[in-house]
Image (tube, rainbow, N blue to C red):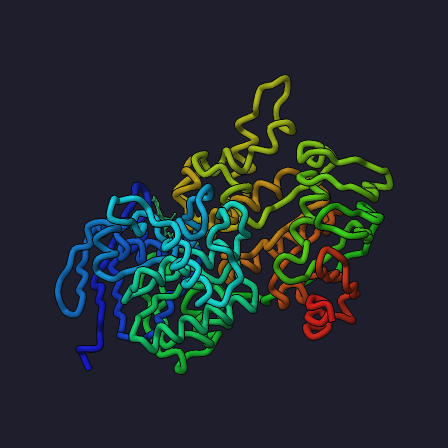
Length: 495
Ligand SMILES: Nc1ncnc2c1ncn2[C@@H]1O[C@H](COP(=O)(O)OP(=O)(O)OP(=O)(O)O)[C@@H](O)[C@H]1O
Ligand SMILES: [Mg+2]
């Protein structure tokens, strides 16, 4: 039985200045299994797999491949050992094509050493087509959506013929259909004997794809189980050390005055959008990827111009030409892509949270650092942002904790129209509830929220009303009492 163990990590510890990310963790991987790694934001999941991929060096502990003790020196070495990884934050070169990214650093060349692009794009296209996704290998990565970029990462990892494939939250940006396709690829890989380490916060999918699960908490090993031996609530109590209240703590408030109205808003992505939003309301927006949800947010926030129609804020017709103007009008936008639009990764937690608020706090140009400190401290504790301090660079936080920083930034901007695009992507179960409670608090104070989400349970659990988008149009509009999963899917598919 022992010979089907491909990898063992024993007593692994890893410290960073001020942080013990891993403390004596054990992990074992069998041939052809999907092994789930589970834990709250900052538990140490990404750190553990980065040690395997050669991105980080362990502080102590031993790693065995097929019972042979091995030191993993660097990413190239890990690759040679047959370890492939798809990171949580996408790592593609946006100025290059999908195909060039897949073969980056190992481009097929002719006898003269010149890159054979015909071969490169041909092989890349084959890998992409194998995943059954519709991406042209010659397209630049920057012109692809987040989900498509993720699929390019998957194709790239698969192309390396990895024996151990690590996926760090691969589905957080994928649609249900794409997740199905990814799972089909994972099953094919399993059949070939590839072992997969799979990280995700979506508990439902663990039961669909996982064979075993290992739980980490605060950098410590909690336990390993066969998936069929545990329930969802077993896993939650292994992960979360505090008691978890309701999953969707929806509170209903009195719906107040109209704060935002769109009349016939159109541009190249949107057709005749009409709706109004009131204080005290959470308006959910459902729709498949590419249905125009994010484009709608971008139009309201002034990233994209509108061609026709009008936007009214507090009853006044406003022309929103830039995000700056939008912020002035009290609009906040938490983007779906935190890396490119939400955060300045090289700045500290405090600087990121306070960035849009300098106007609020500076009197005669002097920034009140006391107020900044207080606000930052407040969000660090309310949202349980795991950081050794407010001056830590955000690039050093775990993915989920970076997302919480983005959230704080807009919460403390005192905007009263808040657009949240996939607000809980990559956020663990416990922190999700805290974010929902903050939403309640915001609307109790008279703000209004537009929540774009691909997670139907979240939309159904937290919205007062749900709009569904399809091909840039609103294809459904339901008060929450009348909404259900089936109706929303019908409208989202345009049937
Ligand atoms: N390079 C680094 N420097 C300093 N601290 C780090 C570094 N990398 C990770 N950490 C810290 O180590 C801890 C574990 O982080 P890790 O990214 O492994 O968490 P995670 O379990 O993947 O969380 P998430 O679900 O949010 O992605 C966190 O407190 C994080 O801030
Ligand atoms: Mg992580």
